[in-house]
Image (cartoon, rainbow, N blue to C red; front, top):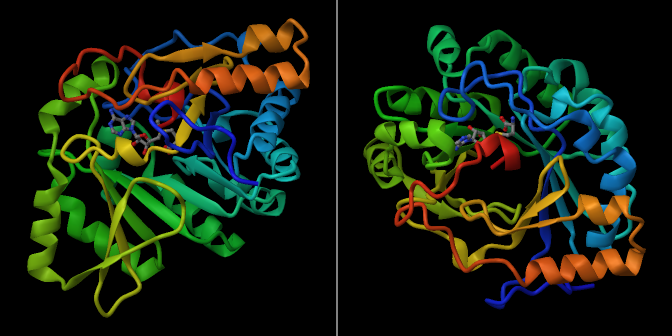
Length: 327
Ligand code: SAM
């Protein structure tokens, strides 16, 4: 079935990012402020039953892909149980997870068994001290998580690196070598002005065209594609299996091909990463809405999707941190 969710700009919406918590066990300086405590209260979190109902409704409306994200999704207890439930829903063909991998070593096998196949793992540095400075966490745990994911059979494993001037730009080539060695896919991401943290980090903004130009001096790069429905533009390094994706929301936005919406842990459906347009599903779920009513509500919400973000024109607009919607 093709998606019944068509937005006002004729884009088909068939992809949902599902945040299962706004909490995180890292404090990447460009994402969540140190000491931040203003998290959603547990009574406001959608329960697994509520999440399953919403995803079932999206599946019935033609959504095929679900990416579980956060905060840090592995902070939510019993995540593999939720993943199993979502994997078994009619229509859901592709279940993937974004994680910082801190807790992945412990959960990789159970997640693979649950039906998650594709992983995106944040990794901004391969240097222990630099990793600690950027994230407040320990690189060893992430590397252990990555190796456990490889052993469990996830494919592809995509490494997401936010490239920042004066912070980790000098590590780009080391990350390329690391991903060639381990058969990971690599994606570079531009910093976005989300929340005060994201806006402060814009001082470290790097236009990814410059990263690409520099890599082209060392490698022959040929245009490539990668399944997954995301916005990255891929290049392959000739003579290797490495594909590198460039995610450029600032230097070259890709809103005209946007196919997604985002559900936060409190049941708010965000229609755009870079706008405030949203629709609250939790009150409807807790007031006993019928399955048909829920589908109608989702159809209505999609009519609220804006044409594009305005990170460049209105950089102060988005107050929420990236950890609310999970990227
Ligand atoms: N914890 C999970 C993870 O690490 O993938 C999922 C949530 S995390 C918020 C998703 C991605 O957003 C990470 O790759 C992170 O680096 C990125 N991110 C957070 N704030 C950002 C910002 N202001 N600009 C660009 N990327 C950002």
